[in-house]
Image (cartoon, rainbow over all chains, first blue to last red; front, side, top):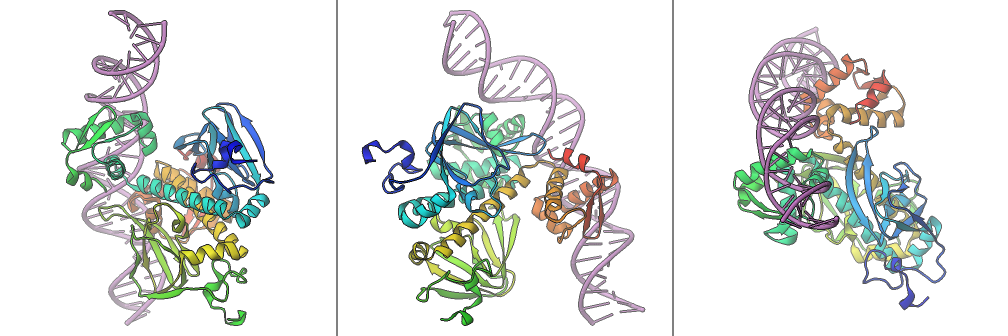
Amino acid sequence: MNKATDPEWKKFSNPNDQENLFPEDLKYSIKAYKKFDYIFRQGDLCDALYILISGSVKTEMVTENGNLLGIEIITAPRPLAPAFLFSDNNHFPVDVTGIQDVEVLRIPKDEVMRLMTTQPDFMQQFLSHNANRTQFLTNRLQLLSIKTIKGKIAYFIIEQVNLQGNPFIINRNQTELAGFFGVARPSLARSLSEMIADGIIEVNRKEYKILDSKKLKELLV
Amino acid sequence: MNKATDPEWKKFSNPNDQENLFPEDLKYSIKAYKKFDYIFRQGDLCDALYILISGSVKTEMVTENGNLLGIEIITAPRPLAPAFLFSDNNHFPVDVTGIQDVEVLRIPKDEVMRLMTTQPDFMQQFLSHNANRTQFLTNRLQLLSIKTIKGKIAYFIIEQVNLQGNPFIINRNQTELAGFFGVARPSLARSLSEMIADGIIEVNRKEYKILDSKKLKELLV
DNA sequence: TTTCGAGTGTAACAACTGTTACACTTTAAA
DNA sequence: TTTAAAGTGTAACAGTTGTTACACTCGAAA
Protein backbone atom coordinates (compact mmCIF):
# COMPACT_ATOMS: atom_id res chain seq x y z
CA MET A 1 0.00 0.00 0.00
CA ASN A 2 1.61 3.26 -0.98
CA LYS A 3 0.91 6.58 0.59
CA ALA A 4 -1.19 7.93 -2.24
CA THR A 5 -3.75 5.21 -1.70
CA ASP A 6 -3.72 5.20 2.06
CA PRO A 7 -7.32 5.39 3.19
CA GLU A 8 -8.51 8.24 5.31
CA TRP A 9 -8.51 6.24 8.53
CA LYS A 10 -4.77 5.75 8.34
CA LYS A 11 -4.53 9.37 9.34
CA PHE A 12 -5.87 8.40 12.76
CA SER A 13 -6.65 11.62 14.57
CA ASN A 14 -4.01 13.89 13.13
CA PRO A 15 -3.97 14.32 9.36
CA ASN A 16 -0.35 15.46 9.47
CA ASP A 17 0.87 12.25 11.01
CA GLN A 18 -0.36 9.77 8.51
CA GLU A 19 2.92 7.95 8.04
CA ASN A 20 4.04 4.80 9.78
CA LEU A 21 1.03 4.45 12.01
CA PHE A 22 0.08 1.06 10.63
CA PRO A 23 2.20 -1.65 9.02
CA GLU A 24 1.45 -3.34 5.72
CA ASP A 25 0.25 -6.55 7.30
CA LEU A 26 -2.20 -5.03 9.78
CA LYS A 27 -5.05 -7.35 10.71
CA TYR A 28 -8.33 -5.54 10.83
CA SER A 29 -11.99 -5.61 9.87
CA ILE A 30 -14.45 -2.90 8.94
CA LYS A 31 -18.13 -2.75 9.79
CA ALA A 32 -20.75 -0.34 8.49
CA TYR A 33 -23.69 1.11 10.41
CA LYS A 34 -26.71 3.11 9.34
CA LYS A 35 -27.75 6.47 10.67
CA PHE A 36 -29.32 6.17 14.16
CA ASP A 37 -27.93 2.65 14.63
CA TYR A 38 -26.48 1.90 18.01
CA ILE A 39 -22.79 1.19 17.46
CA PHE A 40 -22.07 0.41 21.07
CA ARG A 41 -24.21 0.41 24.14
CA GLN A 42 -23.21 1.36 27.62
CA GLY A 43 -21.81 -1.81 29.19
CA ASP A 44 -20.75 -3.49 25.95
CA LEU A 45 -17.45 -5.33 26.12
CA CYS A 46 -14.55 -3.41 24.63
CA ASP A 47 -12.13 -6.03 23.35
CA ALA A 48 -10.53 -4.25 20.42
CA LEU A 49 -9.51 -0.85 19.20
CA TYR A 50 -12.32 0.77 17.26
CA ILE A 51 -11.68 3.68 14.95
CA LEU A 52 -14.43 5.70 13.34
CA ILE A 53 -13.31 6.01 9.72
CA SER A 54 -16.29 7.72 8.15
CA GLY A 55 -19.38 9.56 9.29
CA SER A 56 -19.98 10.88 12.78
CA VAL A 57 -21.48 9.61 15.99
CA LYS A 58 -22.67 10.97 19.29
CA THR A 59 -21.84 9.53 22.68
CA GLU A 60 -24.35 9.75 25.48
CA MET A 61 -24.42 8.69 29.05
CA VAL A 62 -27.62 7.04 30.08
CA THR A 63 -28.84 7.17 33.62
CA GLU A 64 -30.72 3.93 34.07
CA ASN A 65 -34.06 5.67 33.92
CA GLY A 66 -33.51 6.72 30.34
CA ASN A 67 -32.45 10.31 30.90
CA LEU A 68 -29.65 11.42 28.66
CA LEU A 69 -26.74 13.70 29.29
CA GLY A 70 -25.13 14.58 25.98
CA ILE A 71 -21.41 14.20 26.05
CA GLU A 72 -19.94 14.88 22.65
CA ILE A 73 -20.07 14.42 18.94
CA ILE A 74 -17.25 12.51 17.29
CA THR A 75 -16.43 12.98 13.63
CA ALA A 76 -14.25 10.63 11.61
CA PRO A 77 -11.42 9.87 11.68
CA ARG A 78 -11.13 9.25 15.39
CA PRO A 79 -10.81 6.28 17.73
CA LEU A 80 -13.77 5.39 19.94
CA ALA A 81 -13.03 5.11 23.66
CA PRO A 82 -9.56 3.65 23.09
CA ALA A 83 -8.63 3.93 26.73
CA PHE A 84 -11.06 1.21 27.72
CA LEU A 85 -9.25 -1.41 25.74
CA PHE A 86 -6.66 -1.61 28.50
CA SER A 87 -8.78 -1.03 31.57
CA ASP A 88 -9.50 -3.72 34.14
CA ASN A 89 -13.22 -3.35 33.57
CA ASN A 90 -13.28 -3.01 29.82
CA HIS A 91 -16.84 -2.02 29.08
CA PHE A 92 -18.11 0.97 27.18
CA PRO A 93 -19.18 3.73 29.54
CA VAL A 94 -21.49 5.40 27.06
CA ASP A 95 -23.92 4.73 24.28
CA VAL A 96 -22.49 5.40 20.83
CA THR A 97 -25.04 6.18 18.14
CA GLY A 98 -24.56 7.04 14.47
CA ILE A 99 -25.81 10.47 13.46
CA GLN A 100 -24.86 9.63 9.89
CA ASP A 101 -24.06 6.38 8.15
CA VAL A 102 -20.73 5.35 9.58
CA GLU A 103 -17.91 2.88 9.13
CA VAL A 104 -15.90 1.53 12.03
CA LEU A 105 -12.48 -0.09 11.80
CA ARG A 106 -11.73 -2.84 14.30
CA ILE A 107 -8.21 -3.89 15.31
CA PRO A 108 -7.98 -6.81 17.74
CA LYS A 109 -6.29 -6.21 21.06
CA ASP A 110 -3.26 -8.41 20.45
CA GLU A 111 -2.69 -6.65 17.17
CA VAL A 112 -2.83 -3.32 18.99
CA MET A 113 -0.24 -4.58 21.44
CA ARG A 114 2.01 -5.44 18.53
CA LEU A 115 1.54 -2.00 17.02
CA MET A 116 2.41 -0.35 20.30
CA THR A 117 5.79 -2.02 20.49
CA THR A 118 6.71 -1.90 16.82
CA GLN A 119 5.30 1.43 15.61
CA PRO A 120 6.57 4.32 17.74
CA ASP A 121 4.39 6.82 15.91
CA PHE A 122 1.32 4.75 16.65
CA MET A 123 2.24 4.61 20.32
CA GLN A 124 2.83 8.34 20.44
CA GLN A 125 -0.55 9.02 18.82
CA PHE A 126 -2.29 6.58 21.11
CA LEU A 127 -0.81 8.09 24.25
CA SER A 128 -1.43 11.61 23.13
CA HIS A 129 -5.01 10.88 22.22
CA ASN A 130 -5.77 9.22 25.53
CA ALA A 131 -4.13 12.06 27.39
CA ASN A 132 -6.29 14.58 25.58
CA ARG A 133 -9.38 12.51 26.36
CA THR A 134 -8.51 12.58 30.01
CA GLN A 135 -8.18 16.33 29.86
CA PHE A 136 -11.53 16.59 28.14
CA LEU A 137 -13.17 14.55 30.87
CA THR A 138 -11.46 16.52 33.60
CA ASN A 139 -12.61 19.74 32.05
CA ARG A 140 -16.16 18.44 31.77
CA LEU A 141 -16.03 17.34 35.38
CA GLN A 142 -14.92 20.76 36.46
CA LEU A 143 -17.76 22.39 34.53
CA LEU A 144 -20.37 20.08 36.04
CA SER A 145 -18.96 20.56 39.52
CA ILE A 146 -19.89 24.23 39.43
CA LYS A 147 -23.25 24.44 41.11
CA THR A 148 -24.90 27.54 39.70
CA ILE A 149 -25.90 28.00 36.09
CA LYS A 150 -24.29 31.42 35.94
CA GLY A 151 -21.12 29.88 37.27
CA LYS A 152 -21.13 27.32 34.49
CA ILE A 153 -21.75 29.99 31.91
CA ALA A 154 -18.90 32.06 33.33
CA TYR A 155 -16.54 29.09 33.29
CA PHE A 156 -17.46 28.26 29.73
CA ILE A 157 -17.18 31.85 28.56
CA ILE A 158 -13.78 32.37 30.15
CA GLU A 159 -12.59 29.19 28.49
CA GLN A 160 -13.85 30.37 25.12
CA VAL A 161 -12.25 33.79 25.48
CA ASN A 162 -8.94 32.10 26.20
CA LEU A 163 -9.34 30.14 23.00
CA GLN A 164 -10.97 32.69 20.68
CA GLY A 165 -10.49 36.10 22.25
CA ASN A 166 -13.25 38.62 23.04
CA PRO A 167 -15.79 38.69 21.40
CA PHE A 168 -16.17 35.03 20.48
CA ILE A 169 -18.58 32.68 18.72
CA ILE A 170 -20.57 29.84 20.28
CA ASN A 171 -21.72 27.40 17.64
CA ARG A 172 -24.48 25.84 19.69
CA ASN A 173 -28.03 26.90 20.18
CA GLN A 174 -29.51 27.33 23.64
CA THR A 175 -30.94 23.83 23.71
CA GLU A 176 -27.57 22.28 22.95
CA LEU A 177 -25.79 24.52 25.39
CA ALA A 178 -28.27 23.67 28.11
CA GLY A 179 -27.68 19.97 27.42
CA PHE A 180 -23.95 20.53 27.60
CA PHE A 181 -24.34 22.20 30.99
CA GLY A 182 -26.82 19.62 32.19
CA VAL A 183 -29.53 22.22 32.92
CA ALA A 184 -33.00 23.05 31.58
CA ARG A 185 -33.19 25.32 28.57
CA PRO A 186 -35.45 28.02 30.06
CA SER A 187 -33.24 28.13 33.14
CA LEU A 188 -30.22 28.78 30.95
CA ALA A 189 -32.10 31.49 29.07
CA ARG A 190 -33.07 33.15 32.34
CA SER A 191 -29.51 33.14 33.63
CA LEU A 192 -28.24 34.56 30.34
CA SER A 193 -30.89 37.29 30.41
CA GLU A 194 -29.91 38.26 33.93
CA MET A 195 -26.24 38.38 33.04
CA ILE A 196 -27.07 40.62 30.09
CA ALA A 197 -29.26 42.83 32.28
CA ASP A 198 -26.43 43.11 34.79
CA GLY A 199 -24.11 44.38 32.07
CA ILE A 200 -21.78 41.42 32.38
CA ILE A 201 -22.05 40.14 28.83
CA GLU A 202 -23.55 41.08 25.48
CA VAL A 203 -25.05 38.60 23.03
CA ASN A 204 -25.80 39.05 19.34
CA ARG A 205 -26.88 35.84 17.68
CA LYS A 206 -24.02 33.46 18.21
CA GLU A 207 -21.55 36.19 19.10
CA TYR A 208 -20.86 36.69 22.79
CA LYS A 209 -18.84 39.49 24.33
CA ILE A 210 -17.62 40.03 27.87
CA LEU A 211 -18.35 43.53 29.15
CA ASP A 212 -17.45 43.17 32.82
CA SER A 213 -14.74 40.61 33.37
CA LYS A 214 -14.58 41.22 37.12
CA LYS A 215 -18.26 40.49 37.72
CA LEU A 216 -17.99 37.47 35.46
CA LYS A 217 -15.24 35.91 37.56
CA GLU A 218 -17.25 36.49 40.72
CA LEU A 219 -19.87 34.13 39.34
CA LEU A 220 -17.48 31.17 39.45
CA VAL A 221 -18.85 29.62 42.61
CA MET B 1 20.43 -2.87 41.88
CA ASN B 2 19.18 -6.36 42.60
CA LYS B 3 15.62 -7.29 43.23
CA ALA B 4 15.95 -7.81 46.95
CA THR B 5 16.87 -4.16 47.40
CA ASP B 6 14.35 -2.74 44.98
CA PRO B 7 12.60 0.12 46.72
CA GLU B 8 8.88 0.16 47.17
CA TRP B 9 8.23 2.52 44.28
CA LYS B 10 9.54 0.02 41.78
CA LYS B 11 6.31 -1.82 42.38
CA PHE B 12 4.49 0.99 40.59
CA SER B 13 0.81 0.49 41.15
CA ASN B 14 0.65 -3.29 41.29
CA PRO B 15 2.80 -5.01 43.91
CA ASN B 16 2.67 -8.26 41.96
CA ASP B 17 4.31 -6.77 38.91
CA GLN B 18 7.45 -5.44 40.40
CA GLU B 19 9.79 -7.00 37.87
CA ASN B 20 11.15 -5.40 34.77
CA LEU B 21 9.30 -2.15 35.11
CA PHE B 22 12.46 -0.10 35.33
CA PRO B 23 15.96 -0.76 33.97
CA GLU B 24 19.14 -0.54 35.97
CA ASP B 25 20.22 2.76 34.49
CA LEU B 26 16.97 4.65 35.01
CA LYS B 27 17.46 8.39 35.36
CA TYR B 28 15.31 9.84 38.09
CA SER B 29 15.17 12.18 41.06
CA ILE B 30 13.23 12.11 44.31
CA LYS B 31 11.76 15.03 46.18
CA ALA B 32 10.25 15.11 49.66
CA TYR B 33 7.28 17.18 50.82
CA LYS B 34 5.85 17.87 54.26
CA LYS B 35 2.28 17.26 55.35
CA PHE B 36 -0.08 19.93 53.92
CA ASP B 37 2.51 21.08 51.37
CA TYR B 38 1.22 21.72 47.90
CA ILE B 39 2.91 19.20 45.64
CA PHE B 40 1.32 20.50 42.47
CA ARG B 41 -1.11 23.26 41.81
CA GLN B 42 -3.82 23.35 39.21
CA GLY B 43 -2.16 24.72 36.08
CA ASP B 44 1.38 23.64 36.88
CA LEU B 45 3.35 22.31 33.94
CA CYS B 46 3.54 18.53 33.80
CA ASP B 47 6.81 17.74 32.06
CA ALA B 48 7.73 14.45 33.65
CA LEU B 49 6.23 11.31 35.12
CA TYR B 50 5.66 11.70 38.85
CA ILE B 51 5.15 8.71 41.08
CA LEU B 52 4.09 8.98 44.70
CA ILE B 53 6.42 6.58 46.50
CA SER B 54 5.52 7.19 50.12
CA GLY B 55 2.75 8.88 52.04
CA SER B 56 -0.58 9.92 50.63
CA VAL B 57 -2.05 12.97 48.97
CA LYS B 58 -5.42 14.36 48.07
CA THR B 59 -6.37 15.87 44.74
CA GLU B 60 -8.88 18.69 44.58
CA MET B 61 -10.38 20.74 41.87
CA VAL B 62 -10.52 24.39 42.62
CA THR B 63 -13.15 26.60 41.10
CA GLU B 64 -11.45 29.96 40.78
CA ASN B 65 -13.37 31.43 43.69
CA GLY B 66 -11.77 29.02 46.13
CA ASN B 67 -14.53 26.45 46.41
CA LEU B 68 -13.29 22.91 46.53
CA LEU B 69 -14.70 19.76 45.09
CA GLY B 70 -12.91 16.79 46.60
CA ILE B 71 -11.85 14.26 44.05
CA GLU B 72 -9.84 11.48 45.59
CA ILE B 73 -7.16 10.39 47.98
CA ILE B 74 -4.07 8.77 46.51
CA THR B 75 -1.88 6.48 48.59
CA ALA B 76 1.64 5.40 47.62
CA PRO B 77 2.78 3.77 45.47
CA ARG B 78 0.91 5.35 42.58
CA PRO B 79 1.65 7.70 39.70
CA LEU B 80 0.24 11.22 39.78
CA ALA B 81 -1.76 12.32 36.74
CA PRO B 82 0.43 10.34 34.33
CA ALA B 83 -1.92 10.93 31.43
CA PHE B 84 -1.10 14.60 31.27
CA LEU B 85 2.50 13.98 30.42
CA PHE B 86 1.45 13.25 26.84
CA SER B 87 -1.41 15.67 26.41
CA ASP B 88 -1.22 18.70 24.14
CA ASN B 89 -1.92 21.03 27.03
CA ASN B 90 0.20 19.39 29.69
CA HIS B 91 -0.85 21.15 32.85
CA PHE B 92 -2.10 19.67 36.08
CA PRO B 93 -5.90 19.82 36.26
CA VAL B 94 -6.05 19.63 40.05
CA ASP B 95 -4.30 20.70 43.19
CA VAL B 96 -2.27 17.94 44.81
CA THR B 97 -1.68 18.32 48.53
CA GLY B 98 0.14 16.07 50.98
CA ILE B 99 -2.02 14.67 53.76
CA GLN B 100 1.11 13.07 55.20
CA ASP B 101 4.79 13.62 54.60
CA VAL B 102 5.35 12.33 51.09
CA GLU B 103 8.09 11.48 48.62
CA VAL B 104 7.69 11.88 44.90
CA LEU B 105 9.76 10.21 42.22
CA ARG B 106 10.35 12.15 39.03
CA ILE B 107 11.24 10.55 35.70
CA PRO B 108 11.88 12.96 32.81
CA LYS B 109 9.68 12.67 29.76
CA ASP B 110 12.36 11.45 27.36
CA GLU B 111 13.29 8.77 29.85
CA VAL B 112 9.64 7.71 29.99
CA MET B 113 9.57 7.48 26.22
CA ARG B 114 12.58 5.19 26.36
CA LEU B 115 10.89 3.02 28.98
CA MET B 116 7.76 2.74 26.89
CA THR B 117 9.61 1.27 23.94
CA THR B 118 12.08 -0.90 25.84
CA GLN B 119 10.11 -2.21 28.81
CA PRO B 120 6.87 -3.92 27.71
CA ASP B 121 5.74 -4.43 31.30
CA PHE B 122 6.12 -0.74 31.99
CA MET B 123 4.07 0.09 28.93
CA GLN B 124 1.36 -2.38 29.90
CA GLN B 125 1.19 -0.91 33.40
CA PHE B 126 1.12 2.61 32.09
CA LEU B 127 -1.69 1.91 29.63
CA SER B 128 -3.70 -0.03 32.14
CA HIS B 129 -3.35 2.65 34.76
CA ASN B 130 -4.41 5.42 32.41
CA ALA B 131 -7.34 3.36 31.25
CA ASN B 132 -8.51 2.86 34.80
CA ARG B 133 -8.14 6.57 35.46
CA THR B 134 -10.35 7.33 32.50
CA GLN B 135 -12.96 4.98 33.86
CA PHE B 136 -12.78 6.62 37.24
CA LEU B 137 -13.35 10.03 35.69
CA THR B 138 -16.19 8.75 33.55
CA ASN B 139 -17.84 7.23 36.57
CA ARG B 140 -17.44 10.46 38.54
CA LEU B 141 -18.88 12.38 35.62
CA GLN B 142 -21.88 10.11 35.53
CA LEU B 143 -22.46 10.56 39.24
CA LEU B 144 -22.26 14.35 39.02
CA SER B 145 -24.53 14.43 36.00
CA ILE B 146 -27.40 13.06 38.07
CA LYS B 147 -29.35 16.09 39.19
CA THR B 148 -31.09 15.06 42.38
CA ILE B 149 -29.36 14.12 45.60
CA LYS B 150 -31.46 11.00 45.99
CA GLY B 151 -30.47 10.03 42.47
CA LYS B 152 -26.81 10.35 43.34
CA ILE B 153 -27.30 8.32 46.48
CA ALA B 154 -29.12 5.65 44.51
CA TYR B 155 -26.39 5.52 41.86
CA PHE B 156 -23.70 5.26 44.50
CA ILE B 157 -25.57 2.62 46.48
CA ILE B 158 -26.21 0.45 43.45
CA GLU B 159 -22.55 0.67 42.57
CA GLN B 160 -21.56 -0.37 46.07
CA VAL B 161 -23.97 -3.28 46.11
CA ASN B 162 -22.46 -4.52 42.88
CA LEU B 163 -19.05 -4.38 44.51
CA GLN B 164 -19.81 -5.51 48.05
CA GLY B 165 -23.24 -7.11 48.03
CA ASN B 166 -26.19 -6.16 50.23
CA PRO B 167 -25.75 -4.96 52.97
CA PHE B 168 -22.54 -3.03 52.44
CA ILE B 169 -20.20 -0.65 54.24
CA ILE B 170 -19.53 2.99 53.40
CA ASN B 171 -16.28 4.14 54.94
CA ARG B 172 -17.01 7.83 54.73
CA ASN B 173 -18.86 10.08 57.11
CA GLN B 174 -21.71 12.28 55.93
CA THR B 175 -19.48 15.29 55.43
CA GLU B 176 -17.11 13.36 53.19
CA LEU B 177 -19.94 11.75 51.29
CA ALA B 178 -21.58 15.13 50.75
CA GLY B 179 -18.28 16.45 49.40
CA PHE B 180 -18.00 13.47 47.09
CA PHE B 181 -21.48 14.16 45.75
CA GLY B 182 -20.85 17.88 45.56
CA VAL B 183 -23.83 18.75 47.79
CA ALA B 184 -24.36 20.31 51.22
CA ARG B 185 -24.17 18.03 54.22
CA PRO B 186 -27.61 18.79 55.72
CA SER B 187 -29.15 18.30 52.29
CA LEU B 188 -27.59 14.87 52.07
CA ALA B 189 -28.82 14.03 55.58
CA ARG B 190 -32.32 15.11 54.66
CA SER B 191 -32.38 12.99 51.53
CA LEU B 192 -31.07 9.97 53.43
CA SER B 193 -33.70 10.46 56.13
CA GLU B 194 -36.46 10.59 53.55
CA MET B 195 -35.19 7.46 51.83
CA ILE B 196 -35.15 5.68 55.18
CA ALA B 197 -38.65 6.94 56.01
CA ASP B 198 -39.85 5.69 52.63
CA GLY B 199 -38.54 2.22 53.43
CA ILE B 200 -36.06 2.25 50.58
CA ILE B 201 -32.91 1.77 52.61
CA GLU B 202 -31.79 1.05 56.15
CA VAL B 203 -28.72 2.54 57.80
CA ASN B 204 -26.86 1.39 60.91
CA ARG B 205 -23.64 3.29 61.49
CA LYS B 206 -21.62 2.73 58.36
CA GLU B 207 -23.69 -0.26 57.25
CA TYR B 208 -26.25 0.41 54.54
CA LYS B 209 -28.88 -2.01 53.30
CA ILE B 210 -31.25 -1.81 50.37
CA LEU B 211 -34.82 -2.71 51.32
CA ASP B 212 -36.70 -1.72 48.17
CA SER B 213 -34.56 -2.10 45.10
CA LYS B 214 -37.38 -1.10 42.74
CA LYS B 215 -38.01 2.25 44.40
CA LEU B 216 -34.28 2.84 44.58
CA LYS B 217 -33.87 2.49 40.83
CA GLU B 218 -36.75 4.89 40.25
CA LEU B 219 -34.68 7.59 41.93
CA LEU B 220 -32.04 7.50 39.18
CA VAL B 221 -33.15 10.62 37.36
C1' DT C 1 -43.32 37.18 -0.40
C1' DT C 2 -45.32 33.95 2.41
C1' DT C 3 -45.12 30.35 5.50
C1' DC C 4 -43.54 27.06 8.62
C1' DG C 5 -40.50 25.55 11.95
C1' DA C 6 -36.64 26.22 14.74
C1' DG C 7 -34.92 29.01 18.10
C1' DT C 8 -35.50 32.39 21.79
C1' DG C 9 -37.57 35.31 25.74
C1' DT C 10 -40.30 35.16 29.56
C1' DA C 11 -43.66 34.31 33.28
C1' DA C 12 -45.87 31.69 37.18
C1' DC C 13 -45.43 28.26 40.00
C1' DA C 14 -43.54 23.87 41.90
C1' DA C 15 -39.75 21.38 43.52
C1' DC C 16 -35.43 20.93 45.23
C1' DT C 17 -31.23 22.32 47.51
C1' DG C 18 -28.42 25.49 50.39
C1' DT C 19 -27.80 28.05 54.67
C1' DT C 20 -27.86 28.55 59.34
C1' DA C 21 -28.68 27.10 63.68
C1' DC C 22 -28.98 23.99 67.36
C1' DA C 23 -29.76 19.63 69.96
C1' DC C 24 -28.45 15.09 70.32
C1' DT C 25 -25.30 10.96 69.87
C1' DT C 26 -21.10 8.65 69.38
C1' DT C 27 -16.17 8.33 69.70
C1' DA C 28 -11.83 8.76 71.49
C1' DA C 29 -8.79 10.91 74.52
C1' DA C 30 -7.68 12.41 79.20
C1' DT D 1 -15.37 7.66 83.97
C1' DT D 2 -15.42 12.09 82.37
C1' DT D 3 -15.04 15.25 78.83
C1' DA D 4 -14.32 17.41 74.47
C1' DA D 5 -14.66 16.82 69.72
C1' DA D 6 -16.60 14.82 65.86
C1' DG D 7 -20.51 13.27 63.71
C1' DT D 8 -25.54 13.16 62.95
C1' DG D 9 -30.65 14.59 62.80
C1' DT D 10 -33.61 18.15 61.98
C1' DA D 11 -36.06 22.52 61.34
C1' DA D 12 -37.10 27.11 59.17
C1' DC D 13 -36.25 29.84 55.67
C1' DA D 14 -33.94 31.68 51.48
C1' DG D 15 -32.36 30.95 47.03
C1' DT D 16 -31.95 28.57 42.74
C1' DT D 17 -33.56 25.65 39.26
C1' DG D 18 -37.12 22.87 36.81
C1' DT D 19 -41.64 22.66 34.56
C1' DT D 20 -44.99 24.18 31.67
C1' DA D 21 -46.90 27.23 28.74
C1' DC D 22 -47.05 30.64 25.33
C1' DA D 23 -45.67 34.66 22.45
C1' DC D 24 -42.28 36.34 19.54
C1' DT D 25 -38.32 36.54 16.12
C1' DC D 26 -35.66 34.88 12.55
C1' DG D 27 -34.39 32.37 8.50
C1' DA D 28 -34.91 29.08 4.93
C1' DA D 29 -37.73 26.97 1.69
C1' DA D 30 -41.75 27.04 -1.15
